[in-house]
Image (cartoon, rainbow, N blue to C red; front, side, top):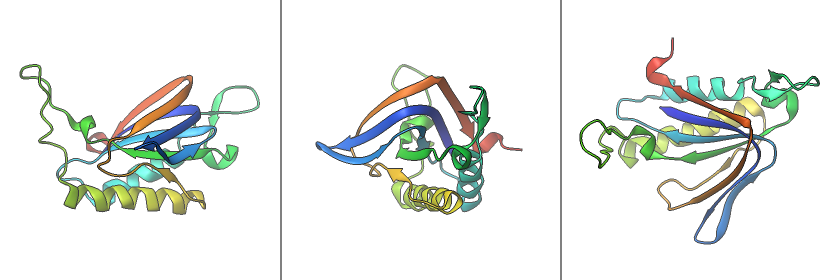
Length: 150
């Protein structure tokens, strides 16, 4: 699984003109599921994201997580995070998991994050054409990949 994590002042995802998910200060996660990913990846990544200490403390230093700040979490599926681009100029998405594999892992990541946070997680809609609007705070953007976890 790959996640692009952005610290945001606010974020919103819409599809067909309807707001699907919206948050204030917190983290916006673009999440891609790859072939070969497993439940363990979703659980590990959710814990890393929820515990990520990139939110400001009283001195303005990146030292707090979502629990400590009351920050919110928005998760948006994005299969294009697994684009292969070495050959030619048209990306290949063959490494991205098929929906029958990706949807349960995407949903498990969300459920795990909500359990760890003790509150709901805002989301987009898997497979939908979505507009994501956010104000990156910092800017702070972090890439995590379960293929390189240790």
